[in-house]
Structure formats: C-alpha cells, structure tokens
Length: 116
Image (cartoon, rainbow, N blue to C red; front, side, top):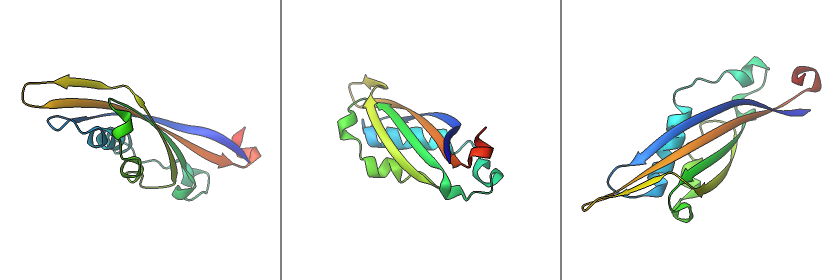
C-alpha cells in the first residue's frame, strides 16, 4: 500500500464579534470542506471513511482552540489536527474579530498498482 495525497482544500473562517478562536477555526474548516463533494475514495473502490484528513489551522491564540470541536467537523474518515499561530486579530472598541485559515489535506492508502 502507498499513502498518496489526493486533495488539498483551503478555507477561511471568522468570529466577527466574539474573539473565539475555536469558532473561527471550525468555520474555516467548514469553508474548506463544504464547497466540495469528494468522490475520490469511491473512485478507487474505497469507502469514504478510508480518507485520512490532515487539518492545519492558523489562528490567533491557537492554545485556546478546542481541538475536538474542530475535528468533529470532518464528515468522513479519520483526522489529525495541527493548530498554529496565524490568522488575523482585529480589536475594536466593542468587540474582537478573529480570522482563521484552514488547510485540509486528504490522503488515501492505495494499492501499489493504483498509486503509480
């Protein structure tokens, strides 16, 4: 079997008034995933749950992100999450806006003959 990168999806999410990095991260991952209908696993006669999704989120205050809440967004497969300092924080007199970016890389473990 050979692990192969099949898809890279990019998204952006915000928390306009609450300054919640988890909310921004969840919205960024949803943005990356919800614009697609991936049929790559079935194209190789694999179930959708065969997908391995590596998620990387850039957001202010990465230590405050609820990692389980972000990974719960994945509709299929198994996921790993890396949260790094990034994104954008915009302070206002009345609120804080956070912007997060997400990259979701979909991997499949393919038989050698399909991986070439």
